[in-house]
Image 1 (spheres, helix red, strand yellow):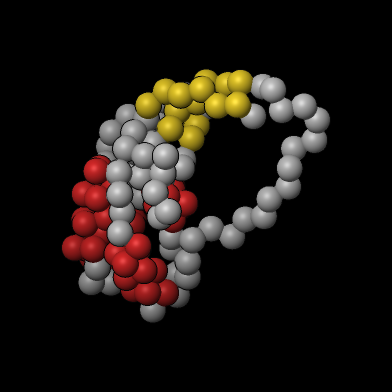
Image 2: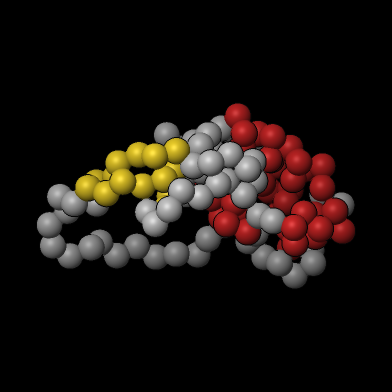
Length: 118
């Protein structure tokens, strides 16, 4: 089960890569990003570190680095469909994929297989 910061880690994980690392260094928060990556490897990312990343990026015009703006609409019809999915290897975020086994872009670990009821 993902910790309470899981959704925020998921948003950050989607954006992880060379550009994020370069901007974190440019904005003076490379050490914070490194702590987040290390914490994600253990499955528990402190909210305070995510807040620091959000603040640093917001000062440079990038709002809500770790927060998604989404709405929810329930799916119509029966929900007794089960699919095999790939989920965060550490449980630090709620990311999932169904097409192929991805790797965590923060830690480099391959996602683990699970079954999901839709």
